[in-house]
Length: 387
Image 1 (tube, helix red, strand yellow):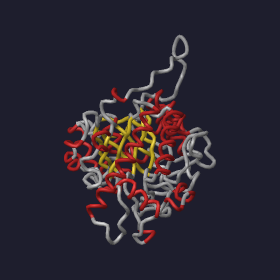
Image 2 (cartoon, rainbow, N blue to C red):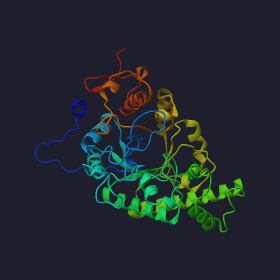
Image 3 (tube, one colour):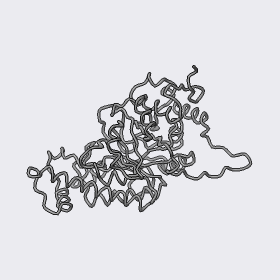
Image 4 (cartoon, one colour):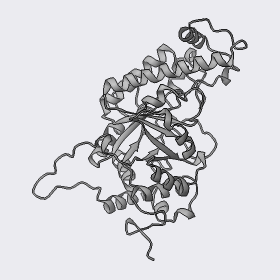
């Protein structure tokens, strides 16, 4: 198959294939440390979605990418020069990417995927990060209809005691069992109530009373000030549950918060920004990153994102981020049954010839390998053009 050929070629080109060391068996390398990662060079083959495209697709059906091969995936990330793999603990469909855990695994999961990616990624000197989508979990919504605003492909879960208990146990289990270095926290937002015509679920009315200390006043009587106070308290409580679960399982666990709206009133000047280990602007521009610099903690590292949805120009964002000491990240949906994106036609072409996520991958790969955007792919490596 074509994907096996290009993986093999890239693996050989970069020396990824393991072999016996001269004079005896090679010692197992020590896992990388986050503190040693001077520049964050991250990427994600995004198992959340079934297909690429600008229009929001349904979440990938459980088991869609269940045959993904950990060795091929680690080789893919190594090929583009990433030092941080972002993959999945639990994806938006509500099933896990490792075996024998608190959350049921993806139906038909062929490999103990996340655990094996951690082992192989660490052997290659890469950090491996998982992922939890906080406000969306299709399985949770289906299993607990009274605690969810249906299961649309948007935020649908209020942060009730029952849900935070489930989320905390999911996080602690994944961190302990798989050896991940940390995980991305996505969609830490209040639920979208369109499915009920704006009406609140009884469980969320109870949560309002629990957090605010007075009965829910009703949808029509609720003031913007009351809604803001409640929303900030609910998000903050959820964040603290996430942080407690992660740091209990591993005090060094990296919590990577991503936001597609950095200046939203629910999160600005919050403990989320002050306590996050990594904080990412998913919208991708440096302007919003600079706007929150005075809101973050001394440990917080900032990251920007390249993805087709945010329409950022990779040739502008990449050099600006590198100059500002801001980490880089990108993501795209898989394009074949192995959950991969074939690289030959991307790396071999000039950045200017490509569009969308292919253009982003091409630009990031050059930055991750430490070459210019004009570098060309030849004989299995990037080379600077001759004058």
